[in-house]
Length: 71
Image 1 (tube, rainbow, N blue to C red):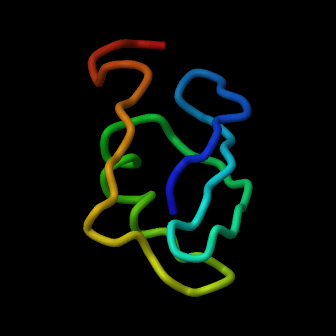
Image 2: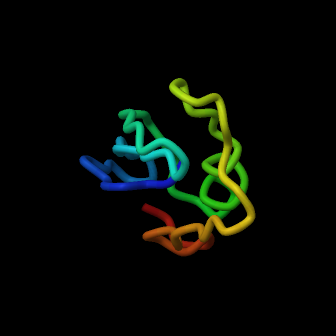
């Protein structure tokens, strides 16, 4: 899965539309805007339609705020 569009964000919590790279299925899910979530959690998300995860070509987005920034 990859982030197609972030629909709302409050501090580091966000809601986004995720899109499967394999079948194009879209899902709305919550997320957390930090390095770990973008690098580890999103690529491990399983698509409910095709049951696949991201492949090696997945490129994570950078967090909106740096790790040491208090929001």
